[in-house]
Amino acid sequence: MKAISIIGLGNVGSILASHILVNVRSIDNLYIYDINTSKMFANYLDLMDMKDILGIPTTINLGIPKKNAIYIITAGRPRKSSEDDYNFNHNYKIVKQIVEKIGKDELIYIITNPTDRITKMLKKDGYNVKSIGVVLDNSRYSRFGNSDVIAGIIIDWKGYTAFGVVADVLKNLSEDLK
Image (cartoon, one colour):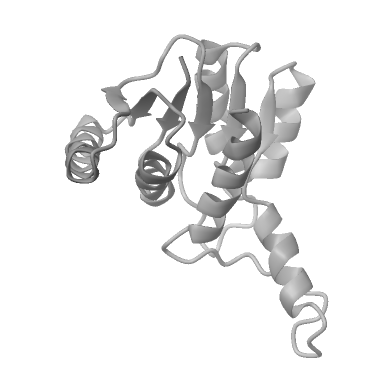
């Protein structure tokens, strides 16, 4: 059984769920979970509509599977432009509680900001985690980095769509589902 579990259905998690459902046809089950059960159920209904309209055989489930899945964590408070630390303490506590329930043997993608700091801490504790989304800064720097106007500035604006994060997740999934 191949399964993917998305934990956290804010902007990124919701968009990611729909893209995975449509683009990753090799999975049997897609699990979605959010602490806001109304939002979770609304996403479930939308995904079921997509599944039916497009004839996708993937089963959509509410909740978090106990094992045998790739887990994608987007849960946490989004960064406000006035915050330098990306809510590290708040978001780290949320993610840490989730990964403790999942366990150290499962592959977990961390998208919650600050992605790289959270991933580094969890790796030290022995979790099988990947930092997802930081590739955006590298991509943007290589595309715009030679400009005299912004040379040396790290571009960190991700917009409302999160398409870059989705692309990074889909790329990793294509490798990890082999």
